[in-house]
Image 1 (cartoon, rainbow, N blue to C red):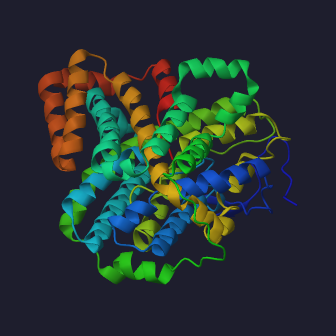
Image 2: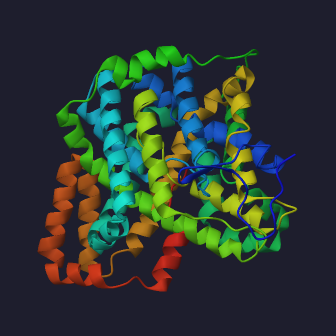
Image 3: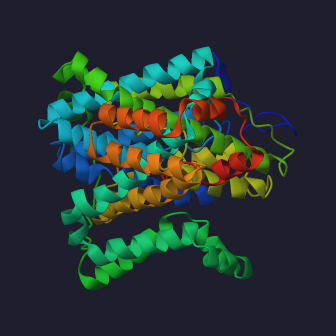
Length: 469
């Protein structure tokens, strides 16, 4: 029986320093709809990187599962151990940029994990610095619009390039199933005609509230019917080999990154922070809007605390399972779905933390130790990664196109995006900065830095900016 919250107060928990831990089933109630949805969606998205870990990073399937388990455990720590009121996930837009940089710069799996450690520690240092000093908002405000748009557009181009060019062989192994999944998810998430259709048909509205799940189900049915997907379900219990994983990935086992790796990874960390700040704006505004319907619960949103949480999680990830950018602030699609249920009242969801903890942590003992579930999802893992990247690419594209204000700024944004996709991160950023100074001009940059954002721009960012997973 969960501890009862008094009307209008913050959900009870255990205070430790600036953080508040809320233990599932003691401080939060079991929310069955979120538990069952998390069982499928969390498992699929958490293990989306398994095919990449086994091919490009030299892990066995079981070691890759252990790596995914650690990533999700650290993600679940954000709301449950630290008290952040967001449904966390990857910093998905920077994922294709990170993969392209690491795979293009290093050939040995140990070097690739060392590079991931360097980027993760760079990012942790960055968010802790900005959190302690409060300079994060100034940094993001200082960036010229053309450069902001170019960075986001670079993430979009890199996402599509990863799916349809770099990993074309993977796509062609399940072309119809992957295409069906992508099309269904794009329609459910972004189609304007479908949005009007949902208003008239409650069944379709409920289906679309399940996030990426309908796309997975359609892909499974079509793929099985065409022979692209074969389900070889095994029974028993899987004990993820965390010790073997440690020996292959931890800097304490394989050695710490070189200074060159730390320096080379700084631009990727900077890009990641810019995108994280957008996620913070998105997550905060979504909660504030829904809070009008929930006077029974006060949600404590503490932005510096989120920075501390993010820094700690990335340090732990860099030590135990280095893979940037798996530790971000927001799983945008799931955050919106959970907030919509929370908005319906206490009978639907007792506390926002009840829904988040049910979605993440309560399914962990089932997901990673139940061999039938893992083997059922195994043929869908490549599709899960493709969906995440394409959804990210599409979302980043229309956000990036809305940021620049003039035709010249849009041209600079395109140039920057292409440079970030095809060149090293440092070179791509230098191209973007140089093009912005030469083609846009210092006067316009200073004007953008000092001009406060319009409310319409904030609303658009809240609606569209964020991570796919």
